[in-house]
Image (cartoon, rainbow over all chains, first blue to last red; front, side, top):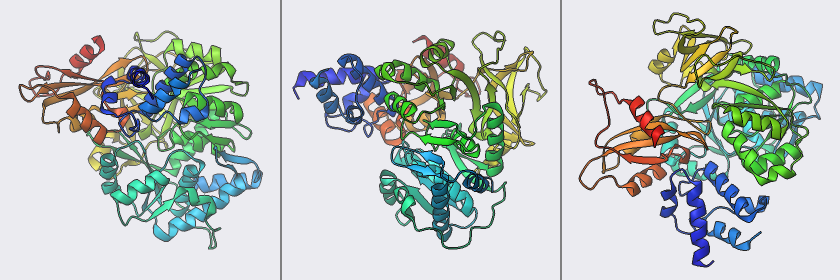
Length: 79
Length: 494
């Protein structure tokens, strides 16, 4: 995944967190939940992905939103 | 005895009706009874009456089966939030001293690490346990402890709220009287089953209804469950309702079976209530509950029409449910009338037996059998109770209780921190979030990275502050008490 996609994903995640700097502690492949991101915040990440893609996410896509890299992958796939 | 009676009654009335459902299994009352009998016999080999059985699992139908099986075996079910950190779980394991743990795969891995030697039973195996072969266990007294539900606490470490089957029974009768559940009702349980709101699922089972268990809440998953399982009733916290309205999946979801949306655990903004009623096409019912009160205590029914709030910004919590006696008490314990603000007190069989191994805290909360909720409330001329402010130091984030002391305890461990105070700040997303005010221990100032490291290691994510604010010093009165009101005002302004 190219760096610009990861930075877009990081920014999207930052906007979904109560304390945006939490994502700065995480590497691209780190698990979001293990890294201290609340399950409710992960729901907000999913909603922001829906807004960017302009469509509802499938159950499979929701289950894949576990890291910065996976968010970047999803956004990279496009609508 | 109460839970055993629910099984027996429904086994006779409709053994092939669906009692429980999740994404893995549909469980009839006959299968429910079999699983509970098998699990109770397994528990009984390890646990004597009154022994604690830890439950560490995500939502699934077997968690409810475990409550029934523990009660049948005379053991005390002690569910824990899987989102707690190892430090938090370890702090609970000591006082609770479980003799057995029933857990899902992630829970088993953690417990094996935290408590080597503690007997473990995979919750996934419940349906595969051999049928009970011995005689059924002797009936357990209604006032014997049935569950210990852990809540965040003012002391900085969780307290275990001990409830009995008498409390479950009272709740069920009051729910049936106030909400109208019965056979044929399908209820979607979207809240975590370790939480005090789990009694609502027991209420529906008592009514012979079907309880559908959502593994974890996502707005998309919740909508799919409501549509697929044709749930007529659901209980959600306001932040969940807001998320349902926000997801794009709502547009393509048929919710024609959904009739009654019950909500609680945090105030529902009127604009959100109006939007939910219009867009989901449901009736709304407000439930005020507290874990120490055994669950739901006050209810504002869909057709209730309270007048204007007695105090600007107050939230109507409704009238006492069947079996609950409520009053507003002043500082001298005198019962206050309309127009006066005091602490909400509750009395009835639903109220907890006490805090686990905390006699002083129990005596403070329960006086003469009456629970002091410490919530500031008033009552109007029509008998409606209005919540003016929750317990002064309580933070209600997305329906989950967080006490500042828990967070302050962790942040004080940071080498960069001299003093700390945590207060709630308003949040459009969660209702409230914790904000930490900190004074630095040295000229280098506050190291946010160190604070974050500590929070991630020692606090469940929902307890993490949303902001760290550096101040010269934490304001305190001459007696050394933190002036939280001043900090709350400052947190709200930012």
